[in-house]
Length: 461
Image (tube, rainbow, N blue to C red):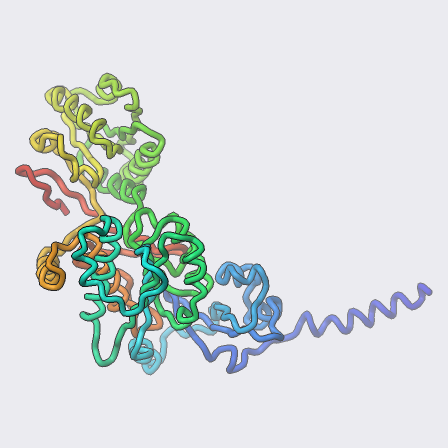
């Protein structure tokens, strides 16, 4: 029997060789649908019954791991009629695109864009083309819901501003009710298949569900949610328009190291949450300057001697206070003002200090207090928007209204009518938006520094 084994193995090997060395060629169907993301070219393949992950990998010369990274949903198996994003081979990319192709990419791909807005308004069901003019004047609406309504009104005004014969926008408002079951049902809504962009302002769990949908369908997702970066961190299609608190602290540290002459620097914290901020400030400082390394000081005991021991007498001390607790910050600042002659200081505080009520402005000014902030208002445009809002709704706009206007204008100016955005940065009326290249979520990195001068906060950069 064994005499047949060797010939059989040779025969088997002969049949295996062609499959190993087989050359795959791309058909017109494979390369007919092309999209661009972050300057990279992708083929969009619609899965049919005969497709396997192995065949797609070999045909396009892309590893299975890379395909799964770009299309996380295929870990559970390919699904017929779903679209797979496949990176175009580097060798196939042209150094200079033909003039016709460049022009085509700058031309609006279609006259109508569909934008889905997910908000926890707690209305029943889905509201299309919702008119909110009466709702904004209803004093019984709680502050949080009113803020969401004004966010949507800001979006509406931007849509009207963007409207032209070449490009129109249709908004669909999806009320999540801040409920997981409701949101799951909304994400199965058939109209979503035609959506081009998603805007979402929701709690962590709801935002997580919308984020998953964005990844699976390769849909750009935009949010102003506080610390939204944490939810969206693995989503290359997501844009977090509000920098996280830790990123703001790191950028505040970078600014402080570059602009303040310091012989000594300390970061004060009173809790574990503040410890993260203090470390972020320390890291930001060290990215700019290696001469002085900020020390982290624990002030949870409220013992002023802990602070005084960390200062250097007769030298310039930069003190970052990571606390938003007015009852903690006030006695700390009073201690420093009482020892100002021995310990010259520059104080760096958080954006929340702007809402403090009990701290003497003269103390803040005498301590050369600086506050970093993610907001940078375009005052002339803000004034125009306020005038519009007063005339339309007979009330002053909340910050959310400006944010809604900015996010829709950013989408309209930078993304609509382009397979690949010429740029992602944008100067809005509420603040500026700077998005560095990244493999994950695009997080706004704009932070400005302000200081107290003549009992008022003024921008110093």
